[in-house]
Image 1 (cartoon, helix red, strand yellow):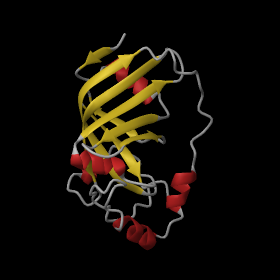
Image 2 (tube, one colour; image 1 turned 135 degrees about the vertical axis):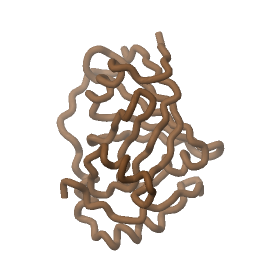
Image 3 (tube, one colour; image 1 turned 120 degrees about the horizontal axis):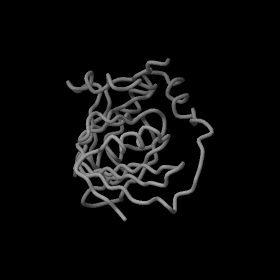
Image 4 (cartoon, helix red, strand yellow; image 1 turned 45 degrees about the horizontal axis):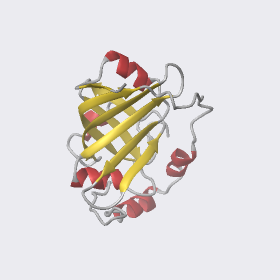
Length: 187
């Protein structure tokens, strides 16, 4: 049976911090629905009603475009260990880029990774938990280092030029481009 709350509880936060992967869904009024898996140590609970996640450059920027157009976002966590549980955060989000005034304060919650392009800041509107009995038991072998390695090896000027040209989603919605290459704190 699904249960809804207005904010994250300590039990919710403990479950979230134990998960190595989460999923993000967004949509604008028209066009495709975007659903993306996210890994790395990229998710933070800032308060019971505010969460954020670090976003690296990838094949598109659909989440940014959808949040700029509509603001709605769903973040889902599945417990792949025991007990079986699915947790969804429904909220309103926005992209915070390195050139934005609030970047420094928000970025201080993360270890920046090579290729970091933005942080999504999400106001929690509701939290839903459900049984998760259909989710398999699985274990994490390791993080896939391909994306971080790709960004770490990038030429900063070429990376910035490529990113500057990515100002539209696949459905033509506008996005704001990141204005600087971030080498990451582990580089």
